[in-house]
Length: 333
Image (tube, rainbow, N blue to C red):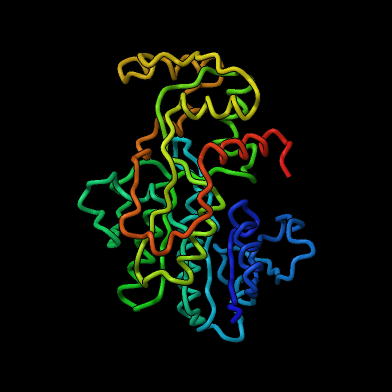
């Protein structure tokens, strides 16, 4: 039987895959998009498009007006992702205010289930007592960076509503998402462009990546089979900076020159002088471009008993990196 799905963030690469997969399964789909957002990616698709903003409740009234709300599922996939340092008011507006409004509207309109796109980085590093199997506890003061903190704050609010209102919400927590559809101006897009154009030397480090198509499949599985109040980590494979760039070079058909930014320049004792140099000279700081590989949010997260909902396409990260490079270079479909 076809289900009614409501999706926010549908115009992102993840959102587009969600829409396509849900339609292929025969479901009914409606999306919420900002007034000035291009929705041409959905031309020819049998979906309903509503205009509104998650951080303005009044603009979402029609979006929530469905015939059978208790049998409907809302996937809140809208987010702003950035690993840049400093406060980002727009990120807070979207990631916190938007999520809070969506949660409140789901309760008010009696939407059957909410699936919230949280993040593995909203959790403290593995081994912390705040993480225990499927029982996740979120505290913005236990994580670093605006993105992780906004995701932790929104996740804590949703889990509070699950506890106090007995609302049916499920959280999915992916690690760093890559794959086709990655924007050129995204964090990973900047890494690829900077490296392939030899603009700045890369830094040592590593990160856990997961393919966008696997995340979409995991979200849908969580929507269909997830346990109320549970959180499910969607993780892929760990890649050191060197391993990642070797895969990038192979995909782009170029040689990896092996040059790396000296580790000693990242040492706290000299880092402030290095940062000051790049600021004064208006040159690109490698630490900013390659921050994804050096942030504290690169713990090797495990599935924590969530395999029953993480059915995925099983796309290798090597293939995902190849598809990302092809897309960012403008040669992808």
